[in-house]
Each structure stands twice: as structure tokens, then as C-alpha cells.
Amino acid sequence: MAYVIKRYSNRKLYDTQESRYVTLEEIEEMIRGGKEISVVDATSGEDLTAVTLTQIILENERSRRATLPTAFLHQLIKHGEAWQDFVTRSMRSSLEGIVSNQREVERVFQDWASRAGWGAVVPGAAPARPEGKRDGTEQEAERLREEVSTLRERLRALEERLEKRRAQAK
Image (spheres, rainbow, N blue to C red):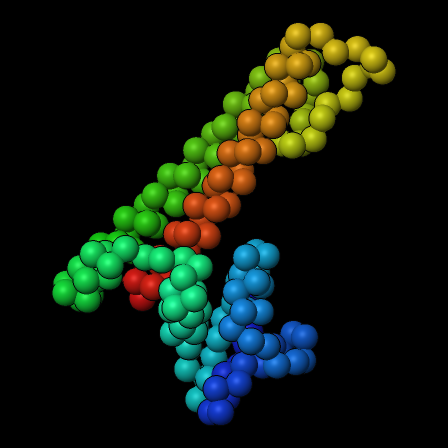
């Protein structure tokens, strides 16, 4: 369920769940923290989510925290909606592929852990083993868990970049 933020005519943003006013920076942190945000006009109920997310991206551009290539921005403006639709579809497809690959890696890891006699393994959690015993298989499993963890972090970063670009494309 999306976090609902109301935007008032004076441009103030009100977090309805926390009952407090928030800044664009706080909304950005909420999103980075995994929350889905929905921004609506307080009087008309109009969905302002895409506009607000784009504003966050533009503010980041202004402060040089996240620079989009100028050539990309030129093409986006030049080709209008057709280009934006293409970018949105491409990014959505890429994200779906990444998520699908992540699920497949988890499935393979679970299968491998099961065959190794560990039973069900929660990704990122170490399997139970006798104290002091670490054979080559367990060391390899630990290495794989670390690799999966690293891949997850990279996936999260890619998802954040994709969401930024998706919001910008709207």
C-alpha cells in the first residue's frame, strides 16, 4: 500500500500516515527506504506522484547528486512522448528481467542448499552447522551467500536508478 502524501496549494506536502509536513528530501528518503509514495492534490484528489518524483529528480540534478546525460535529456525532449514511452517500456522490461533473474538465483541456491543437506535456507542467512566445523562446501556456500548479498545490493541500486528514470519519463 502506498504512503499517501497530500500536496496543498501552498506547495506544502503532508504525510497522512505520520500526520506531519514533509520535505521533498524526506520523501526521497522514504522511497530509498522502500516505501511506495502516492502524492495527491489535497483539494482535487488529482494524482501528482509523477510530477513530485520528477521534481525530486530535478532537484538532485540541480545539486549534481545524480546527473543525467545531456544528450539523453535532449532526445527525451526532442522525441516527446514516443521516446518517453520507449524508455519506460525498456526500463520496465529490464527491471522485470532483473527481478526474474534474482528469483531464479534464489531458486537455484535453495535447490543447491537442499541438496547439500541444509534443508530450507533463508537467502542471506547462514545454515545451521555443528560448532567449529567448516568444510570446503560450507566455505563455498558462505562465499555464495556473500555473492548473492552483493548482487541484491546491486539490484536495489539498479531498481532505484530505474525508478528515477521511470519517474522522469512520465
